[in-house]
Length: 324
Image 1 (cartoon, rainbow, N blue to C red):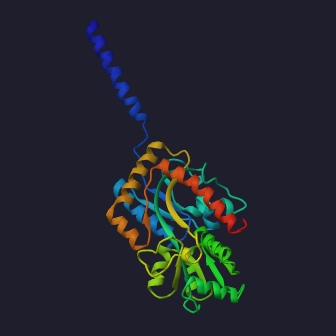
Image 2 (cartoon, rainbow, N blue to C red):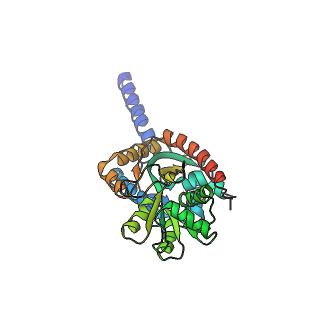
Image 3 (cartoon, helix red, strand yellow):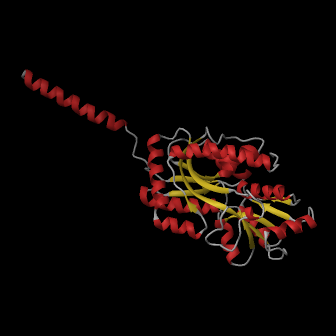
């Protein structure tokens, strides 16, 4: 073999090794198998409905099934704990609410997860006000009438809750109005609302997605909303702030992954989530449920999460709620 042929053969061999070595070491493109989407509240809740709409969209755009897995209990902390301790490989995601990420540290004496350190923020999805509904047998049609009835019958009225987003406004109402009502906690909002519909509990705050169909069906009566403006779908229901100035509370939904998930996966999911939230068809679905679509970058959700943790800590303390 001539020197020229030897050098040519050596160069070709080294080039082949350079191309094949790193390529062989590369992990398969994400996602290469089904992705699990953990939801910390039950089927039929606003959290569940939002997660399923997003999962359906991601399944279409990313080419793998995104499967919703409801992990219910302990005010959402069972689902949050499962995500916090899952492998950070992009195959476990978390569609959750302010309950697990902002309120639970003040509502529970012990948590097995840190809402900031244990999660990688991906993107916001939507906001929802809380709707105050009463059983039709309760003789009130407005918040002032409710306050008057509660003051006339201290301790005899009861209100249900199924998440921090439904517990905290109830406590805010009793504190701001100076009334005494019995709090009845449930694992999920649909369970709580079912007992209000049955008349076992007189009233509750519910998310719009869960409560709106029952209001439209006449099974419960809506008398107030926790946003500063009336909802487009219920323009006749006044803000509670009209009676109790400054009363405002919005719950929210967002997408997270376990901390340590590859940044490339986070960025791709973030872009897909923003595209989903911007899609007119999905925005229309959200609007029909009384939800306000809200998108963000992962960095924006991280900053928002820190501010919300501080906000809900203040609200819970001001409402006089003791951790359990």
